[in-house]
Amino acid sequence: MKKVFLVLTVMAIIVGLVCVNMALAHRVGKRQVHHQERIDQGINIGGLTYWEARLLEREQRRIEREKRRAWCDGELTRRECLRLERRQDCASRRIYRMKQNYIKMWGNVDRCLWNR
Image 1 (cartoon, rainbow, N blue to C red):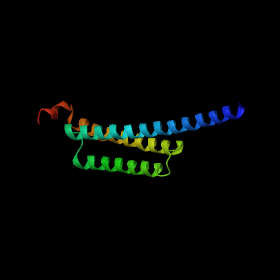
Image 2 (image 1 turned 180 degrees about the horizontal axis):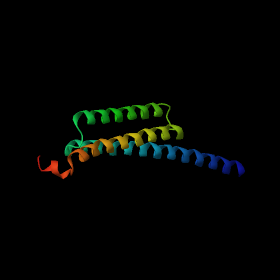
Image 3 (image 1 turned 45 degrees about the vertical axis):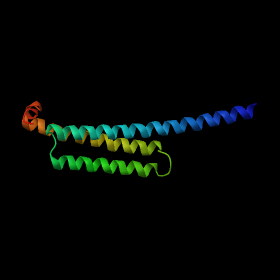
Image 4 (image 1 turned 120 degrees about the horizontal axis):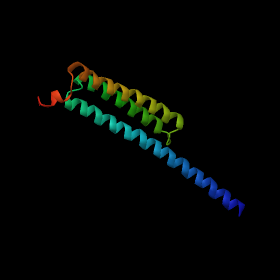
């Protein structure tokens, strides 16, 4: 009876760890999609220039490449996840700053919408 309980406990722990890794990977991927939407929005409203958008998208490709490298062994460790999240935090701040640069220079963003 003790052996069965031990085996079930170990299996539950393994399944739990796999689920945690999948949840971490999903969070990283979801943030990348959100960042791409923010970049596209910045392009559409005129808050980002062509070159700024190009730099931001290059940064997103680098993060994606790093994520693929982290997953090449079949799991995403806590350290790899934290490193990816730090890179995404920096990318998020950079997107914000580049979009706000336009607003500070021209005033209200709505001003550019009626020109389209």
